[in-house]
Each structure stands twice: as C-alpha cells, then as structure tokens.
Length: 227
Image 1 (cartoon, rainbow, N blue to C red):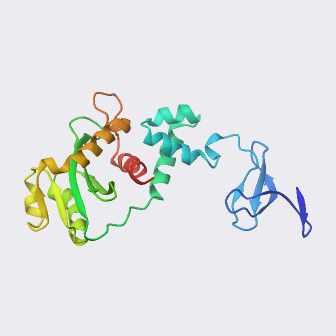
Image 2: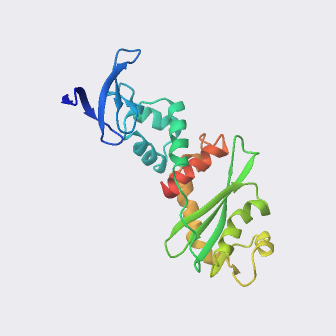
Image 3: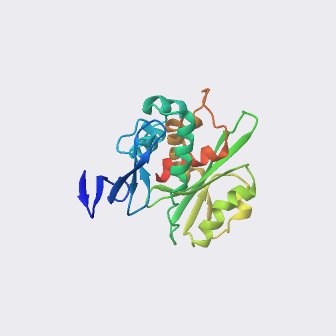
C-alpha cells in the first residue's frame, strides 16, 4: 500500500491500471477495492477462478480446440452455467470482418441439428479466397431467406465471382454475371466445413454432444472464426 493525498491505495486497477482504495468487505470477509479512475469494484485475490482476467482467453482457446461446455468447466474449474454465460459474453464483443468489394467468394451449407435430430438447421458460410477466411455466416432452415442473408451482402459488395454447389435456389437469388455453379470450385470451403466438424464438438458426427440452442451455436462459431 502507498499514500497519496491522505488516501491509502493498495493496488493498481486490473482494468485501467488506475489506483484502487479499500472500500468495505464482501460477505465472505474479503476486502473490496474501488478504482478511482474507472469506478469498478474488484478484489486483490479472487477465490472464484471465473473472476480471473485470463479466463475468457482460456475459454476461447478451449472452444476452438473442440472442448464442450462441461469439458471447459472441468478444465478451468468453473461451473457450466458460468461457462455458457462467458461464451455468450465473448461472442457479443466480437465484430464481423468487413466485406470488401471486388473479391471472389465461395458459399456452401453445412447441415446440423438443434435439440434433436429431426430439427435440422443449416450453417451457410461465405469464404473469401484471397484472405482464406470466413467473412460471414448465417444459421437457419434451408430456405431462400437463410441463403439471401449471406448472398445479398456479397452482391452489394460487388463480388467478382460467387461459387456455389448445385443447389437450385442459388440460381434464383444470385445474378448470372457473378454466379458460377461448379462443385469442384468450392473445395476450399468444403475443407473449412470439415475443419468445423473436426474442431467443434457440437458439430461432430456420431457423438452425444450436440447443440441445444441456436444462440450457443452462433456464439461458438463467432469465436471459432473471429475470436
């Protein structure tokens, strides 16, 4: 601790590196600290592992490595409920990359289910060839509306070419000048779909792990693509 203007400061803030002062106690008797700069409460020593600043980074890494909710909880020694809340929080702060103009894209769908095997959903992804990254995705039923959520953005960006498979709906929602229907030309995004099934446990085949909500599937995909 050190003195400054007759106030005892005990530590620097873990959020803004400002000065914290002692201000009351928790119910368990731990000293509470208050930052005079960012006005956030904190403790010098946390008994709950979920309060550590590096927990979110570890959760993101474990999601990308294919760990399920309960697996992450066991590894980090936090509850499954906290794990779910943190994944949603991390995904909420992730922004999609910008869709650049005059680029070449590949669009394809990956089939999965939510809740039970009769409730089928499709993950529609747009792969940008130059950066070799997924620039956008959408989750929904296999309808024109689900596909147009992706294809309309690509056409607004004046895409040079959009490659798809032989799905008939693409012929009605994409202009003939940019659309190219050639299953051989989408091998890159097909490989990305294989990576998704390999790395994300909720998309694995022949497993008891599956997605129970579209919100969690969306959050995990955002972390995997851009986290």
